[in-house]
Length: 375
Image (cartoon, rainbow, N blue to C red; front, side, top):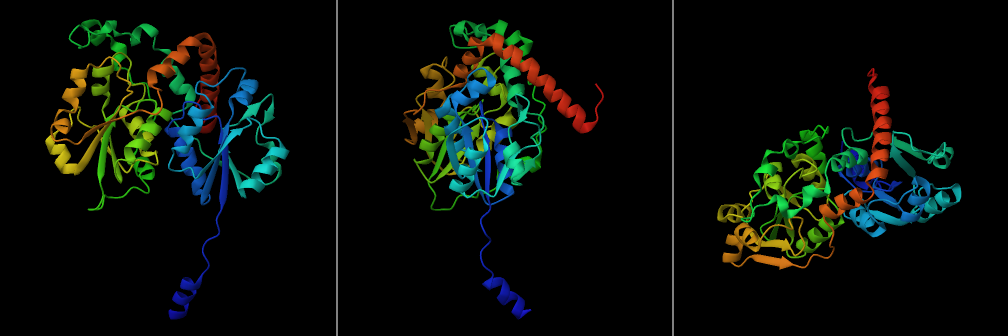
């Protein structure tokens, strides 16, 4: 027994296994984050290549919704990603792949188990030939196409301030619209998934300065990542409050949020700057909440999704934090919000309608084949 313990103590450290994964990661969501998590679990270090706008446009016939910088920032903000290789081509030839394998000392190239075919050719054919290709199961119930479909049921008129009465409350027409209550997500949130996304999170220490920031965090994007990065710098432990669907809809209006509470919580948990999440956070930051969570600073960005909220609404929201002198308004480094993303979709509505129909047909065939479900 003593000899065995000695051998264990003297055993060399486990060799690093470096994983490569690449993609467009347009409108990045928790499904992408879960893919990063699974890929990293096959090794010890994950390098993610983010396809550039030009090669995406050349291969798909249209540019991505979010540009290079926005997509790169989102990927860099994920807790499961160790390093990012920007401006990666959509289709890697053997020369490029060999260069990346050497540059990053890659052991395996990983992709989801769904096919990735462009012009009749498997994008990962060169990696397969080298014997360095591995697959992971896709995160079922969510995809970029699914989220795109949710946005396509929204119209520009749904985002105007005309739906709000003079007192800032929702008009009766808005409240009566049944679509406002639709939550078309097919994702099945389990406790196991929440635990997997919480890996690495720990309880605050007595010496920690706890920072609190809240919001909807709908369509979690680069703007959210950047404001959370700055919020974390205000202390040493960041708690993020995520409001429930009813609260978000009451303050934002028809069809919002696009993603439900559980989906939004997973996206926030996947951010590397976040230490804990307050699920179903109250709209008002109360004295009891500040005391219970030992909050030292309450942060809010200058740019927000709720453009229609009045100064009075925000004063009410943070009344206690202002009163006790712990509220801090910080300049938002990136002026991007969910309305911008929806507007970009609407500006190219015809193209996205066709893309949605094509992609959803392919996804239905994938699930039918996977589970033997007859159409």
